[in-house]
Length: 101
Length: 205
Image 1 (cartoon, rainbow over the protein chains, first blue to last red):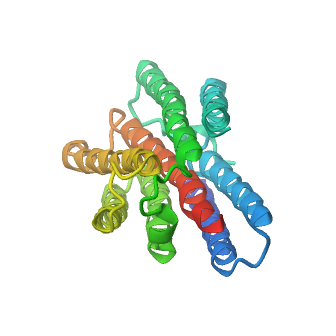
Image 2 (image 1 turned 30 degrees about the horizontal axis):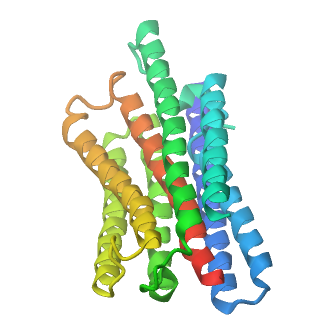
């Protein structure tokens, strides 16, 4: 019985470890692609900029969900953090539009 | 997915009050992080709106060395990975392994900080000083404050290592590691945005 419990914990731990490596690998791949795009200038600037923003968004989601485990624990964690992110997007967009144009 | 019991593991002998206190600390920290989002958003917004105001001085685009930025990014990304490994080790009750992973995290953070100081020194020597232009001021405010966050995270992790585990892994210090980890990952998240918006975008224009 206790052996079985240990075995389950062992494999769960190994699973977590593998998932963390996968997240890390995904982030490195995204970073390398972003780099390559910028250095080679393989696409029109607008497309590159759009792709860079999408990649950044994916990396943020990966970090927040898989490394910081926002989806685990109290719902209030996500509510507060989501609120902060919402305010953040508003502030940066507002400053950008107000000062730039 | 990972069960909540593994996040801040219930320690043998942990009372319900202690578990609740742990939960409250984590909640408080998420609230702090949402404030940090607003803080960095203000700096990013300022940078975005001023990055064309170069006042005829040296521009950032001509100075950025993407390979250097790439190495900085890799060191910070891998420090996030070593931070979760520290946490996995703590869940298994392996004090030594946890300490080693935390030291590795601190080392990677120190590498990042060292490269950033090198980068700033180089920029300043090339005439891209804080007072050179509005764009330069906004750049140093944003990237400099991020660097200060990394420096604070380093100080935090090292002080945890020095002061917090004299009695091993206890109900009192598990959430300390988790919260320091949240902070560290958040600093990494901010870097992902800075890396994209400031460094890569400059080279696209």
